[in-house]
Image (cartoon, rainbow, N blue to C red; front, side, top):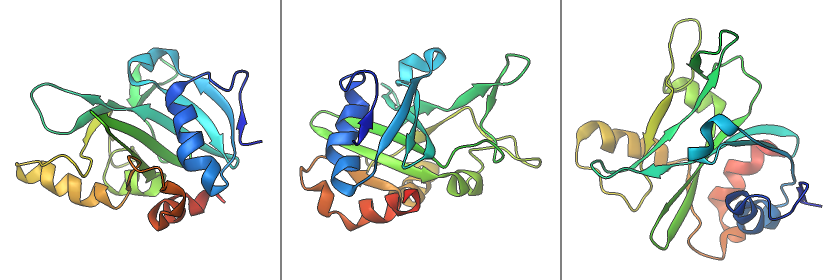
Length: 176
């Protein structure tokens, strides 16, 4: 069974990923949990082939190109902090949509660390950042630079033939 939740239609976004990405590529999903504090970003965690995944849905903002997503947690003092390289997760998946377009970023923890999005003893990390799907056309230098490195980890799910997509197979291969 590919989806192990109390209700198979528990979350429309995760159900979409199961139907159009995980199931066709043989990735099983279990232990889906809602993160109530980040409900505005459809925050969940789940296990993909036993690897912990942090899931968010990015938001379109009115004044900037790209989409924004928060990725914080609370520390023991109940203060919001960035995720850390020592935290137990394998990747961050961010769903993006605009009109009839839909896609997913699959960022391995090591890449988030490389780009100072998650913290370590020398870097503070971030509580949120912008993602730039391939249909966005950023004009400033920093946004364009971000889109270039992020594009390696982006899969356009607008097509129904995702199960034949070599990039999807590659990005999910470390979950096997």
